[in-house]
Image (tube, rainbow, N blue to C red):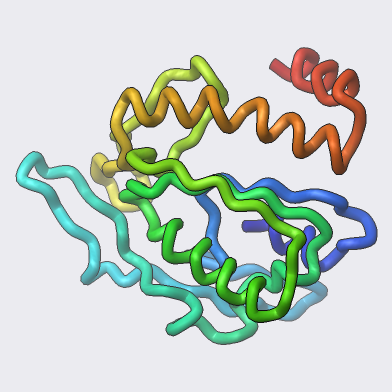
Length: 188
């Protein structure tokens, strides 16, 4: 969310932004820029669900295009190049709703500065390939175990598919393939 805000505030300096399970609005926490507070979409705790196993499904936000103050929305149309990865079984936040809303707005404004990759059966956490797949974890903020969504095979396929696509996107808009790979190797 912070990277998306920066890409829209500084499009002359930031040529590309990747969103993995992101939102189209400032959510859950206040932000400020140059001393001005940016409104946010808060969690609707009444929407959280507890499964029979005692797990929390955090799908606790409403469609920001219907409920968020206009100032909370991220103006993706101002960004240069955007790549969105969305797990359609996200149990943490309604990422598919958020990105569908962002796409409706971008289309209405005639923008073509974006690509959206949707993964059926994939949850919120789309990690690099061969990283452990996390379908559940303890979430200190609410002191419970939450569901991230997805299934093991779908998560693994999304991990393997999204990584080369992400690297190609960054190579195209940020720098050469050698630079990206050298950066990744030196930071692993």
